Length: 343
Ligand code: HEC
Ligand code: HEC
Image (tube, rainbow, N blue to C red):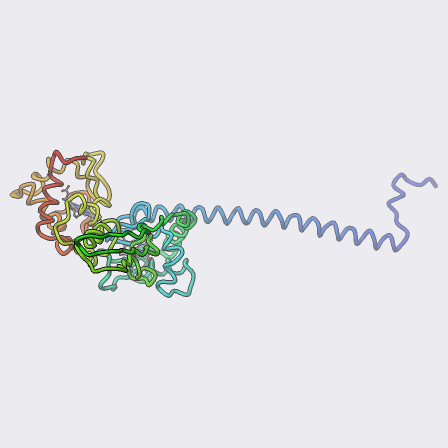
């Protein structure tokens, strides 16, 4: 009988059969492994995708719930609420508060529970409670999303430059004041994005040591010049005379919420607080019986007395009367209402 053309498929030797069998098994393993590799890639892509989406959702949550206090870009509003988009927050904050867990958990817990009972805070606002578990408005997945969004700032925050120390020189001052030498120790950990004062790492900011001589007029002058360049807590800053209005406008964080160089118009109202470029035209029309100066004065010392339509009450801090002298508030009012105010 003639052998069919596929005769070579008949394997007679048992050894060859075993070898072929093993080869088959090996090939299927290889196929599985290859698929596994692709599967990993696919899963990774899926996770990235999920992560990306949750950061996106977190961004929406942040821009509707958090920016009024922490700033549009998360860099904080001076005196209102701390920066989260800051190198200090990502590198030092955990150590300062003695938190042993992860940064993720620190953020998630702070957002969920808030810090509603914190007294004697340096911030004019209180961190609200957000999780529905504690009576707030957010679901757990939303707390997680906004946490992911905050964590997403890390890479950029780590590139922030804290700058070189403001003063490093040793100056010799001699003369009538009796000061013969002044050494100014450079500040440590001056993070312009994070003016938190309660952490140990923040304690030794602006140490000014005079090594030689007694303090006279010249030295006092030097100290005053220094204070002007260093961000300081309100207590430490108590200056002798009234501060000029344009300085107050930034120091009191008015500029964080209001734009003084833009007019309030129907399509440019201003956020989070109304624009103030044309306040000198609108102020007198807000509350009947109050002229422009009275209205602006009252708006500063008692923001809830009249709430500008379209804006929520409670965002503008209510304690400006305790942070500025009467004279300072009056001069600030005049300055805001001055139509010829230099831009
Ligand atoms: C009404 C103002 C306000 C709002 C709105 C607000 N926060 Fe806060 N937040 C604060 C204040 C004030 C602190 C600092 C509390 C303190 O003194 O410990 C703070 C602290 C934090 C901290 C801890 C910071 C640190 O360094 O310890 C995180 C994280 C945070 N907020 C996230 C958020 C997120 C996310 C939202 C939006 C869902 C939000 N906050 C909305 C006022 C606010
Ligand atoms: C955290 C944000 C925030 C800060 C800081 C803030 N404001 Fe406001 N301000 C608002 C908001 C929001 C409104 C509108 C709601 C209202 O009337 O209370 C407002 C309203 C006003 C008004 C009334 C404006 C109008 O168009 O009728 C004046 C005046 C004013 N602020 C002045 C100031 C001054 C001066 C400072 C600094 C000393 C300051 N604000 C700081 C948020 C802020």
